[in-house]
Length: 398
Image (tube, rainbow, N blue to C red):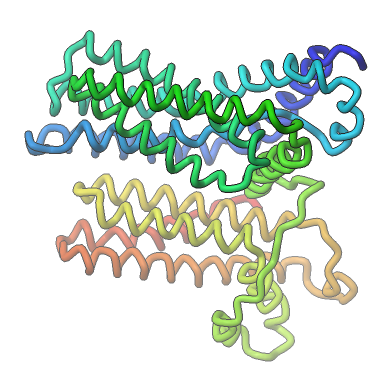
């Protein structure tokens, strides 16, 4: 294995196949259905807001802030494995060829998120801020350059410091990125040049320090493992990932929730399902995230019909994913040793989902009450959340 370019090629093919294997489950029919509604609702809300947005809206600051957040998150994709810290040592002088390919893939795989945000920002910049076609083109080119700078800087920083204080580095890069984008949009080119010089100095400082230390294999291997584990945990919401095990947490403050399953033999499965849901981080935080998004949508989406579509789609996604997760586990459980009705667990899962979706609907109602909009359509939003949840429970095959 003397050719590191060949090593990268083989690992890259395996990595792409691994992504495709799980993405076909993630981007399945029901998720595509949810995405269509969510994107449609968001697009409609955005277009309607543009028609009523105030002329003094700080478009430059908002666009610079959001894009800078995306540009600053530039974790390198190295595809390194545990054994590389040993087997790559004889080839350390040739490691630059491998890392060059890794950083190239990092750039092309991560730039699309920033470009998507850039495309979304174009109507805001042209209609509210009055940006011209040429200014948009220059802005696009600068975004491409800044993403490259951000990736190179984070990589050099991680190498020089073994990843210690990475959030401090991201904060510094974020400030420089915000300043660069804002000065570009506001046509303050003198300040833009100054910021560009500071960015070049910041990159060169860490590039120089990088040469003073050996390549930190352990750190980049850990970064790669953490990155892939996040993907596997996300994929685990949609299908079984064999080599992943969900983390658990006690959550003593939710013990009162178990009183909904009184101490009786017929409630055995309900109690077990409740404990599984509450203590398993993947399931519990999935529900928390989707519930939070539903509340945010109910509060900030100004059009009731769009809010109904948005929260209804999230309710559908919540039920589908949690039901699949709770019923598809193949791990051994003690209750399998006893002659329990096979339908008992399914009934328990359905009952649990009705409870937690009722709570989700209550949170949405609370958000609407805080917003202070008491129209009939807005009051229907939490009702729709529960109705969609119930219909999904009854119509889902599993």
